[in-house]
Image 1 (tube, rainbow, N blue to C red):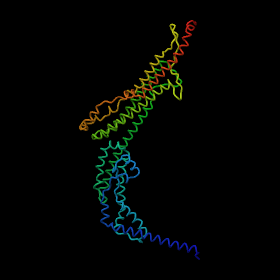
Image 2: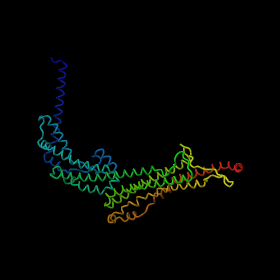
Image 3: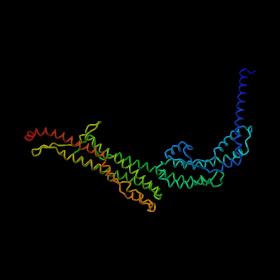
Length: 432
């Protein structure tokens, strides 16, 4: 016997199903009404659109949005241009069919739906181009895109057919077109990756250079005059070798990268010069850091700092000779030695030439830049060497002054101690 709760549940169920049926009927009515404007000719027109279109950040994925925001431009990326109304129609038909004939499907909508698999396959093919092309742009900054403008322009010429001529009803050539575009996208992307990897290797060499210590001061070691001089000379020789090796690697990387731009337009060659200047600035910053750290290490050994006391750096002997007491070597000699070490420490970087002077596009055919006289004259202009720039840097000069002031203070202190021995000179002279 059905209970009262069962009857209430049955009544509630029937009421709910009535609401659902009413809702479904309303949805179906609205959909069929919207389909009234989509006859077979209208649906065919929606297919007669180019395969792709240019897009701005409002239509892109999150990754593309970030890239467009970086470039500060619109209409850079590609987007699949399949009509959104047709995608909605495919979805509607798919779900109305689940009612097994309870709701009839308009013939032209059902006929188009039967081609869904074909259009999905075409969309997947087109998305291969979209993804490959957009991946290239996402990997390039705004400045790098200008450097790659020739490559992107050539790629655009191949892709333009899908932006202007080929439509979703074109037959036979879409697959060939997609394969051709994807192959060229892969070729350009490989160049982009080599470019990026080359930049990373150059940055690594800059980090190595900036971490180099151009002098050698061992802890708890007291140096004789000649030993300290020989130690620093050997250290400079080794550091020069490492700097030359690092710079040679940087040059080789840049020359390898340049092979992709050497036949470029004057615009690309200008961007190449700017790129080399950027790398040149990175090298200069690395060398500046190496020199500064090295001078600071010498200053810390002589003057100490907030964390450490001055180091006992030199071994001095107190000599009584011809009735005169003095230090051997003299403080004048040691001060001169430290001054020479500081200056030659800076001169270590003189082995590194300016990249702007040795990697300009002058090796390219003159016809490539013949129409750009002002830039050509700029190419022949020699830049100040790294050594000249850094040795006259205000920060470096301040550290050198600190070093020499420290030596002067040490000389004054030693002279004060020497006075005590001078007062005892007669005792020392008369001692056996």
